[in-house]
Length: 639
Image 1 (cartoon, rainbow, N blue to C red):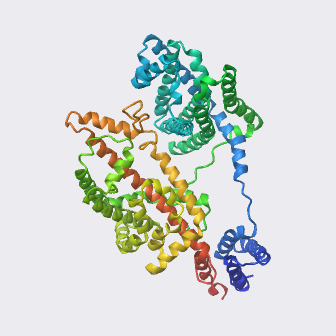
Image 2 (cartoon, rainbow, N blue to C red):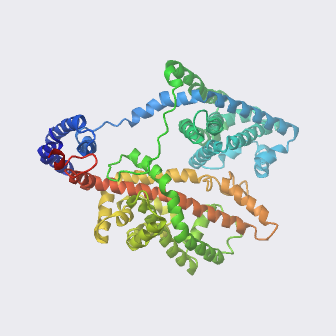
């Protein structure tokens, strides 16, 4: 049969199927019958018109509607169980050498911390801090050597410890990207502290009391940190020893393996935090045999899952142990905007799109946005000059509010808010421009698009901007559940092809239709960004008035700011001012590197919902039938 005859014969049936699929009142039996016919047509097209557009059209139509006929059972739980049963133990087995090396190093540094404390009792003050040692000595005199564990409420202590341990593990893993050196430093620091801590109580005559108290939670906590360091070394080895792969490819494989190991540690960190918050604090009322039992059980669980069980899984699945890495997926340069993307595809395509377009976005904003930001920072830092000489418990919160003007203490704050609203709008338009011209566009075209779409996008994003600037942090979580309803208005006003009113209304409509997906995107992206932000704005990086006047656990930006303040002491008495300005600059750069990824995801979600609601892309493909193309037949072909 000729292709044109095939199309004419089935055109009405395909259009009827599209109409039924988009109707909420469609009868499942009718839809199922039509779906069966279309899959038959697709098989026929794959056989006789494999390189024709009709085959592509039918394939997309069948894929986009498949879930309406055959609801796929969720396999999330099954995949999760399989990961814990097979995948993670295999990764631990593959990384066994680095795990053993990390354990040996940890024992070495613990022994060194212990020996140093025995030879010099003041060494504990160097490692643990003067305030901590002084307070513990006071507790020892009162007969409660480990009374420190009773200073907080149980829930608060559980949350603080769980976050703290997770952050240490995250640093230990991520710093492995510095050729493994960062992980070694983290392991050394923590292991020396453990050795000094334990030996400090030995010197005071409370060795067994400390052992039976500290290791109730320490069995999980210390073991998990050592395993995290092993994962970090695996990450570093991916750069140092790429083998037959490029270093980037090797790093991707190593990161994937390390992340699996890291995810497996989350339950153990939670258990360690729970034990420390609810059990360790009651050490004095527990019998020795119960403490020994808890410690033995904790170590047994760790040894079984990370030592014995991986060996069992490897022996049962020898064909998987040496499984070669899959080829690295190349990043796409051109994306099908009319495709209905799954949640996973939304993320993978967004990261690929980000990689292709981010530098063009940065270049455009260097011209139109960075001068505005520089002026805002000069204006705000002049107005708040008396504040910049100080340190703040949460520098990221205070300084970002200072730069953006949300303190609302001076008139300059309102100018700052206006300037940032312009900057954010320009960032949205320059980022979304990549969807209109995916390749072969100039910086000039991007800037022209920005100023042409700017008024509409500004109005479309106004509600989000008002929330950003005027809603306190404590209420953002409540508003999080309302944001998906109107968050697509910025994308619709930039990418829509009709007037402002229609595009704006379309944004609200699409937001409500994809509420669940958008809520998941917002929450997951917020979590990912917050996780990576820990390197420069750590949750646990704040001044604790009880023990230290320095951050309890400094992040990388703390270290940089401290270095800048030390250098500045030679030139000015207000040495904290340069350090705080450096923090502001880093926060602004971080915003400009992460916000476009979020905007790109919204752009893809806009096109996904538009395709689901209007079948825009499928109709475009259908309109091409019968027209002369490279791989299409026309009447000329049959004359």
